[in-house]
Image (tube, rainbow, N blue to C red; front, side):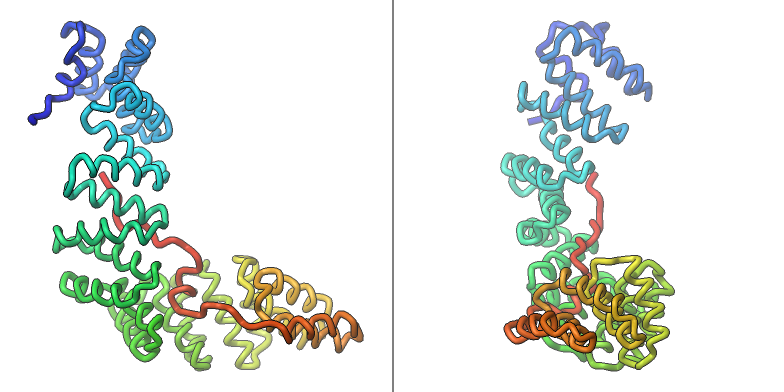
Length: 378
């Protein structure tokens, strides 16, 4: 069915003449005089509070001014009165998306998609809304459907690859990686995703090769040096790891994990002075990383700063109670301080503990963060 233009939609079925306030508001908007138009719409709503088209248009005006919460409120009121207004639910979904209320946006896009099956724009919007909400498993079917229809869309494929990575599907990542290479053979981000997937599959050599390829493609790619450094660190190649962590910090001085692992690498190299300097900066930048506190505790023990060491080991334990290492370190420290009962209590805990931590490169790089949205819907 052919859609009416906006003026026709707003005036259809009403007794307002073309000289009426609704028509005047539309003319002002077409002239770019949005503020004046908004005043007229507000007057219209004072006279007719349940005029759905006016509510919808007020929502549109608010969205144009990036006042998305206000836009959502108007759209919801209009939807409750007249859900048949064309594109009203779509506009509501877009306002929710731009307000970063992704779960609500996904619900609106999915509802609209049920009315228009196969619509490519709605499929992309539904997928990206689930992606933004962190519902990666739900995002995957939409993103797969969208990429199947658009063979040249690199951002969509990157979003799909990220979703596969976050749902522990490394084979899916590698499949999408091949498609990305066909579009951009020098995609550093794609090389990194492939490296994370290979690491997750236990292929350390392949993972390092992919990260080296990403480094070659773009030495400034976020996390690329950290990824290489971490892989070297896991193989105890601390001298080489130091160089990579330093390179990541040169690219991004706020990269807390690089600074933490740099400090840990110095500690393994018996360079307590450099280790302490890096670790103290790291803990200021991010006090929530257990390794930093554990390593600082070790440095302070070596410096005979027992009280400071106890504090750091206790912080490490609080952040990861299932890690036996800080318990063991604290037990040894208590023993050296003559605090026997406390030492015995810690040793008893160590004897009943098992290490339960995912050390994959993907989890280190993600750090619990959501990947950024690679594209913004319009």
